[in-house]
Length: 159
Image (cartoon, rainbow, N blue to C red; front, side):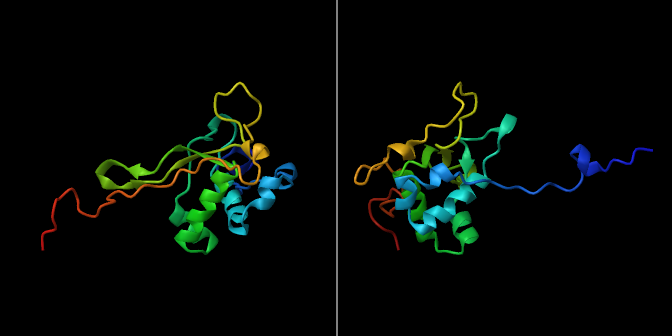
């Protein structure tokens, strides 16, 4: 009778999911210029990354509402933290937010520039945050309003 437990063979209870913050990243001017909320949000984004054969960098998704709930902050504060991470070069929007099938909203997909992209010849990420300088931030992709005029395409309101 084999006495090895199922957890040693990859079955049974899931293992703890963890992430690491790299000191060299945290010592950059871009990291030090991030708001404390953006610094707290970054590990949550990194927890969404799957490494190895399941590398999903570029397809990492975490909604503003999920981030706000996880951090215990308002959605507006979470949205500003996402923008701060984009502006400093830590994340890049690879697919903007949009309405999916049946009108359900889809949150943006992100690339963490610290990490390698899937199927990349490079052994490390682009690390755009190393190129950041005060007053020279990276472009920020903001979610667009699905109905900016509020009129649903009608020329005059109907009561």
